[in-house]
Amino acid sequence: MAERTYSIENTIAALAEAKKYSTLRDILSTMNPSDLASVFEELDNPSALPRLFRLLPKELAAEAFVEMESETQELLIQGFSDTELKEVVDELYVDDAVDLVEEMPSNVVKRILRQADAETRRLINEMLKYPEDSAGSIMTTEFVSLRPKMTVEEAEKRIRRTGVDKATINTCYVTDQGKLIGAISIRTLLLSDHDAVISDIMEENVISVTTTDDQEDVAQAFSKYNFSAMPVVDKEGRLVGVVTVDDAMDVMEEEATEDMEIMAGMSPSERPYLHTGVVETWKARITWLLPLMLSAALTGFVLNHYEGQLSSCLVLSAFIPLLCSTAGNSGTQASVAIIRGLALDELDMSNLGEVIWKELRVALLCGVCLAAANFVKMIAVDMALLHNGVTVGVAAAVCLTLVVVVLFAKLVGCSLPILAGKLGFDPAVIASPVVSSIVDVLSLLVYFRVAALLLPELRG
Image (cartoon, rainbow, N blue to C red; front, side, top):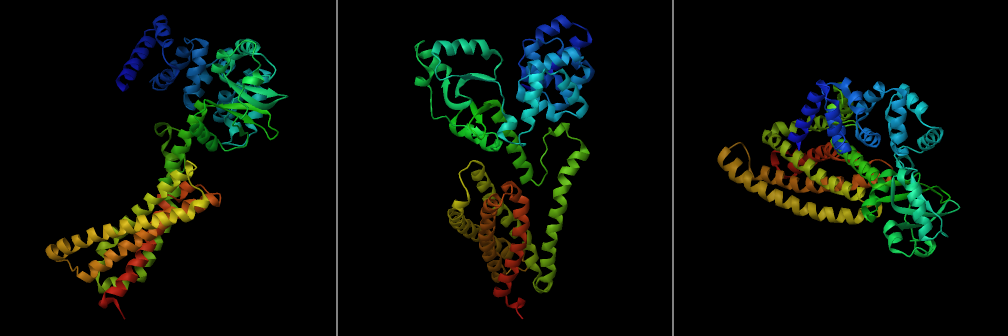
């Protein structure tokens, strides 16, 4: 696929340079909107973008425009005349127009709104009032509504008359005085008698979301119910829009990306990696690296406090990385599993006891297994072959510490995300960086305490 795209880009660039616009029009008009967007974004000559975009049929041009990154969209808008901009805006669904307005600088937004018709401007301004990341902010108002007393024949006529510009017609919604009372699929309509009444054949138990529901919850509902569209109602139950499956998929991708970046200790970014500047990337990372570095100072304080013990048995220091690394990995394993369960609504605060009980048993099995393997390694390799000062007592102290720190790490890793979610924080924030910082300190405290109990040279 990469080779094919590269070939198309070179072909388009060569044809554009040779001004073979007729051939270009034939090639571009057969391409998928997503592929067109990718090709336009990779062109070496951005100034040619408006000229190539003008070769596309209006509907295809609008679909490709929606798929482009905001930087490419801005370049195109700057090269458009007012008439051309109006044609693009008129072809956009309202939710796509809202996304465009949210991502453009103010001077570009003013141009877009000037070219939109009065009804589109009203809808855009209305949707911009909904909370960010809510169902209302990602819904479209372009859907087909039917009346309960309509016959199937009347419903089909309405769909043919109004459905051309709708975001989806696979499912139509039945309203009575604006309130959502049912839903009916095109399949049901086609297989029903023409004189059947909509209220008799519609599905009455309609699952819907409200305008203020979190967009991540909406996306999860799509996954759970396998919907192609989800109706959105206001507080009074009036149907105000629908969320389509393509918007739900975008939300899933955004949320997954955000969680991965937070779990890696980075501030989330909505822009692709190669389109993000060095300074912007630095800002996203340094804001996490600084506090994590400062939190690591606690590890230094612990080491300084037990400096006397280390000087009495220097070989203990050789196993600090092993203990901290194992504890950190154990805590991260547990936290990632729990964060996934929270994201999929498999877990909540009521499951905290079950989660802790399960993770403690898993931790015990993991800890004993790791300790046994490490004890054999320390006796057979460190003590017998390397002669680096390891004794049976040191091996016992390290391995017993392993069991305890794995237990602590699993406990911290599984409980903190659930508690964070209960307190209103993002559970992903409690992932690997935070968990690792906590368990590093706990590992050292346990290590020196166990060593002091088992090794005579450290007592007194």
